[in-house]
Image (cartoon, helix red, strand yellow):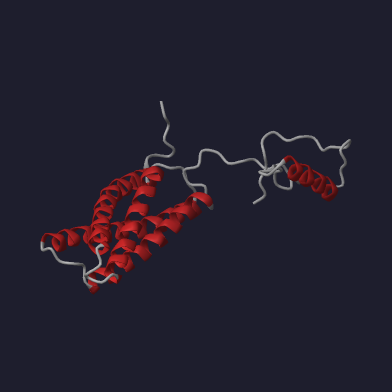
Amino acid sequence: MIEIIPNWHPLLVHFTVGLLGTSVLFYLASACLSTTNSWKQQWLNMANWSLWSGCLFAMGTAFAGWLAYNSVAHDSASHAAMTLHRNWALPTASSFLLLGVWAIFIARKDRRPGFLFLTFSIIAASALMVTGWLGAEAVYRYGLGVKSLPVVAEGADGHNHSHGSEHDESAMNEEDHQQHGTTETEQPPKQDGHQHEH
């Protein structure tokens, strides 16, 4: 069994943000091209399909988010954070659903999005960025939906590891020993896991 923590909302939301954000970018890019440019219609098609696909994911994301809102463990501070996120998310999702329906009517009439449509798209995309930021705040600042957090030992100065060569690693270890007043023969006791300082 695969456990989804806290539910499907964290998985679906990335598709929602990616597709809806991409749709607005392609609408704007298409609008900047001249009518004789062969890319104009292709980018408009890309914008439409990204918007419509994003709207489908948005409905699933909103539903999963509502379930998470009513089920994850939280305190008063995190409750305020997720309520603010919800209050931005629902109008934002509704705005994109409206844009999706609007885009269908425009496409059926074989027309191109006008100034009003593009302006509303930019406003919706801005609201989407705020909503995403607030969602990230709820998780990374308040720990909503997180099953466990790293335990940082008292007095630990972060964790040590190298993504470079052996030479880089030995240099880092030597520098670390100098900073902490230790030598190769006088090592501090190892900690289980690695620690982060927040």
